[in-house]
Length: 504
Image 1: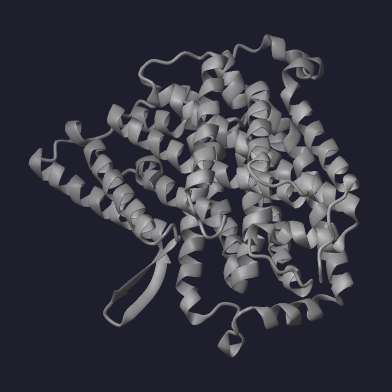
Image 2 (image 1 turned 120 degrees about the horizontal axis):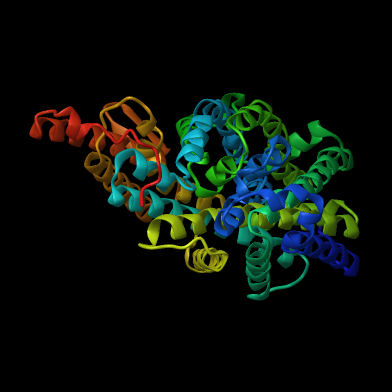
């Protein structure tokens, strides 16, 4: 089946919805006070207002802000592209979201309480207050900053992809993506994505529900769709969804993605912006609803095979499917949904990274909005560099690369909440070992998210992030034991600071 070419209707509808979302978010500081008269009575600094929304988001806004992190270009572009190329293996994104929700329910309210009581705005703030180490604070902050760059790059690729599908080529689509994200974040701060996340989700709901109902009808039903897809994908013996060789990488990628999901600065920013710990728990209970829609979105990769979509760029799978099946004007609406679905979370990512720069990396910082805006702009420039210079086979590999990096903060941030006798020097050694090991494997493997291992009679490809985290934890524990022996296991020396107030 050949795809139709976009016409003026598709372009017009795309511009209408995408630009309207940018304008709504960018002007939020002007019209929001009219809707919330109580705002004048708050005492939040301008920096906290721009970067954390004044820590006042209730259950409804937090639902769309936190849950929206799962509806990004990763979900709508990268996951169907992987399913299109590999089949069932691309569905590893479903169990990872299921695993992560109990983690949110159990851990994130405690982190929120610590951050609220200590006035912390980032994970690095929490770690420094816990262990009293400026070096460890920098390690966590740098990991968060570096990890989010390829993730934002994935969102830029999502916007670029739909602009290319509208018929524009060269550097223009990428520049369009960058400028729109920069303007949206600069003017609106965290209130922009928080208050337009609802629009984003509704648009994606409409596009996805239309796709899972209309596309199968157009192709002769789900049975015919699965049969057509099976003819294009590699045959798997025994009627398995994934091959035996894919089982271990499938499971380990799901597990490592779950551990990493809420360590990113943007997801943690959404958590810390909530107004109470109960707000976070309520969201953790209902967030699995997102997993259902995520599974439907992943099916778009199989639908593309049934629709006869053939493309050398896997990122174009979903846009080409929409052009082939839907009227041009509705395809334009779906493209706008994808672009907005990338714009909103990318803005939160840039703000979370800017918070790290202003609070933790710079030796002396102010709470000025201008400084945070400039830091966020620098982050987006770095993400643009990732798009240009990182040559990932699949767009999803950029997100998984970020996961390898951010997982190295797990021992300091999450294990640091446990009554373990962890010391800052041991955690720093583990962080450095895990980071170097993980990035080294990624470089050798060409940014592939899994690495082959073999010992005894076992051989399989395992998530690189999980391998690096294992090295990190082992080094942390061994160094911790050595330090305890060297210092005579003095409790006063080894116990972390109990004060969770923000340091200097």
